Image (cartoon, rainbow, N blue to C red):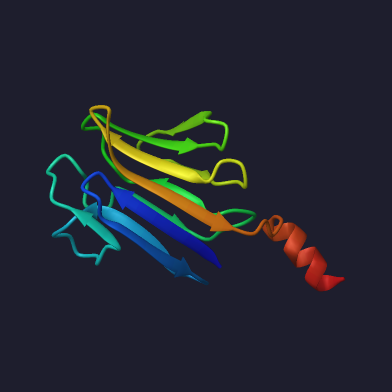
Length: 129
C-alpha cells in the first residue's frame, strides 16, 4: 500500500491510500477517465500525471504534453529528477515528492509514503524460499 497526499496551488488538499491496481490521477477535467484530482486549466493535459504502486517504489508517469510544464521528482535534500513528456520514474525513500508546474508556477505538490519492499524479483525470491 502507498499513501498519496496532495496540495494544489489553490489550496485543495487530499489523501488517498492505494493498494493493488489502484492508481492516483491528475489532469484537466472533461476526459473519459475519472481523475482523482482535477484542475480547470487548458494548459494541463487530461491525464497529466499517474501514480501507481510498482516494484520497490511507486511509479510516476508523465502524460502531460509540453505547454511549459515541468514534472519533478524531488528528494528529501532538494535534488531534482526531471520527467520528460511520456516518461515514467520510480519514487524512492529519498525521492518521494512530485511537483507539477507550468511556466514555473507550481500547480501541484504530491507526497508519497510507502515501505521499501524490494524489487519484484526480490519479492518473488522471498516467496519461493
